[in-house]
Length: 348
Image (cartoon, rainbow, N blue to C red; front, side, top):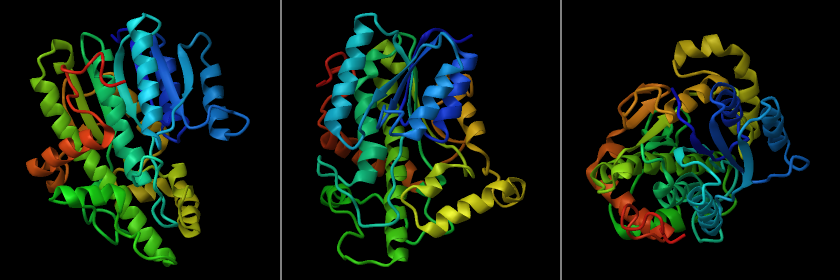
């Protein structure tokens, strides 16, 4: 039985998120869905319009759409404060999950830098989501809940066919800062399409490696926390699979990749012979909701491939990498004591 509570889903108008929202509102009407998107205007964003249409199919649904710009740490801070205040006042029920679904990649041009001074892929995929999670730990239900982070098979060097430069987490603070402020692949202009694809995918894969390593560190801190409710929160990082109908293949990607995505989608049964994780976004969306509600592998923490507990890459399991990404992330997002010492007033 699923108790009432709130779930935050970032990137809620995405390929995986829309079927996830549909499943959530259909199967769990007592859950309050807090859905974030870059643009809340359905007239300007066709994907937000699809999200609105999805919600409208569920009369009485407890769902609301909120603007959240993950390329701005201030936007994340402001949103977290609004949600925390609403939960404290009783306007929203306590959180049972945060699903960090939103993503960014750029495989067609030089690295982008946000107004915060960080490489955009790393900030959107990792930094902003960690800031959101840490600032809202004190807003979870007394019974705990689950944080769902999104990893990828790409976090494991050599796993993706078109990988040109492997993902990496540097071993020094200086190199770690360069990773997010002056990333590799930014030193030359007028690169070829292959260069853009190679360096852009490395930035994406490295963000997924950071997410996965950070997840283990987060769980370690959660388990040791002195607050009974916080120690009950579990975190997982999921590789949702190779989603053949994802819009990701058509966003900030070379034309050849976009065309390939459209061509391959109808051949899912054949693709599964080569990659057992190949599937459609709808199936992944269902798994994500069931994982978020702790219905799959209840109480488990760690890395999942689709809905099954799995082993992540050696680099993500390295304790030194986990400790470095934990400490550096706190500094990058402007937090010091992220758990009991700050919850309820976590610099929001």
